Amino acid sequence: MIGPGRFDQLHPCVAPAWTEDAIVAVVQDGLTFVGSGADQTILGMVDPDWWGSDAPKGFYSIDSYSAVIMNLTIENIKTGVFWERGKLTVENCTIRGSVASFLGAAVFVDSGSFNNCRFEVGGNSIALSCSYTDSLDVLGCIFDGYGQGVATGVFVGFVSIVDCTFTGNRTALAYDFGVSSEIRNTTITGQNSIGLYMVGNSSVVLSGVRIEGGQTGILVASSSDLTCTNVVVEGTSSEAFSISSNSSVLVNNSHILPSSGVGVMTSAYFGDPYILNYSGNYWGTTDADSIATMIQDSQDDPSVHCTVKFEPFANGPVPTEKKSFGSFKAMFR
Image (cartoon, rainbow, N blue to C red):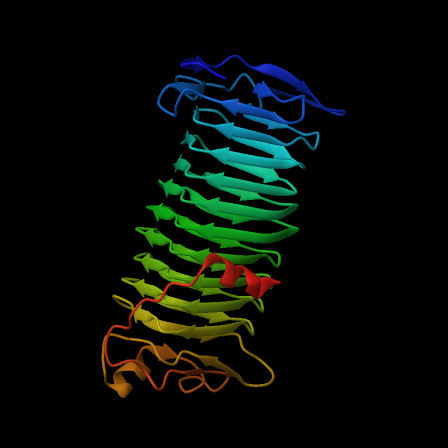
């Protein structure tokens, strides 16, 4: 149990080949850290003045430990949570920072979950990053500020994003290196660049997702696979969907409503022709010729071996049907 107050004393955490500073250097398995509330228990500096240490952490574990962290705030430090191996659960916490290259949480775990947490990140920073992780669940979290929301690195199995809100990020979600993910009942608004960025043979299923604003709503590249149902992509200035490099995309029962630019841009498709199924969607018009002008594919450039099939299309806004979390997770089994 951690009482009210600010905790900012750094302690050395000794690894076999290096030593790093942390406010909480975890050296025992099975601990639960319970703060007095995110507005009461604060780990971190009053100001982000930690330059005397190379990269201080809030919580730091490198020995396959499992732990639960609850009801506190971590702020003004280089990395809020750094957890290597084991299992980590973080609940009802606020993690904030705006210094250059701030990392809210960097996890390399067997399994991890962030539940009802708030990330406030600015500048050239990342709220939540994972690599060497079998599974990561992010439920009911808020990602706010001009940093990057969730980013995956190498050797990540399955990432679940459910009931989350991303606001004003540079890019909300960035997937790479063959990650599989389910994103459900999530809203992305006010991003500067891209809502969802997925490359490197990644596979993502979206349902009940709204992406509003930004330059590109969803970018899919490098032979990745995307499935969208009950998704709204609107207000984009360049492309609602940017699809390239022999990626496979299925979008149905969704709204594609760019404010300018195009609805679907395809590029870098080679070899055998690809057909992307965009049927049953609402494009803001009932005129097929107008919809065709919102799509850039082989009909516009024969060197792009990809055709977007948009007929039949919806004559008006389509209803939203929710599916259970289990039904989506079963698609990856």
